[in-house]
Image (cartoon, rainbow, N blue to C red; front, side):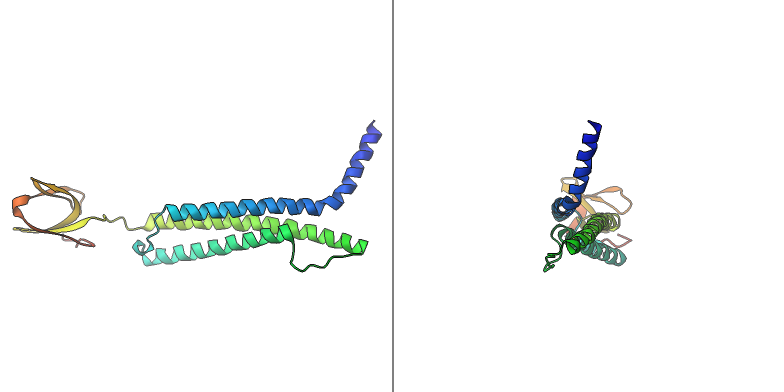
Length: 201
């Protein structure tokens, strides 16, 4: 029984030599599909949600985010090309008819496919990491100034701050120090939106 089992395992090992390349191609096809799906999902998430107004970033942060996203795109593209290369081979490759030549080519192709798969995975993971780094840079360096800044002119001067609302009591602002200020309605002469408050506002 043991000898018969050993012979069967030896036969399977010999057959595996002929099935190794097609098996690697199937694995590469699965990797290609998975990596393409991951890249598409990442692109959709970045498009749907995130701080995409790069004009609010400082100049250095804008350049850093641009470089990170450019490198990420190149790595994701390279990873996808390597996965396709691993799954389908090189276009126009010659079909070898001699047995020994086919064996040598198959061994070399197995090595190339294995290497291409490894590099494809590394490129795609590095690309995803660079996109995440770009998003983090954008989140950490985006100017968090309030969007609803107004300048209120009163009979006693001007005040600038984040507009919180208005009512019978007057206009309510959050000033530079974070304090809440109520400007009486009878003293307010005009309210106008501004892009930013002066330091003395």
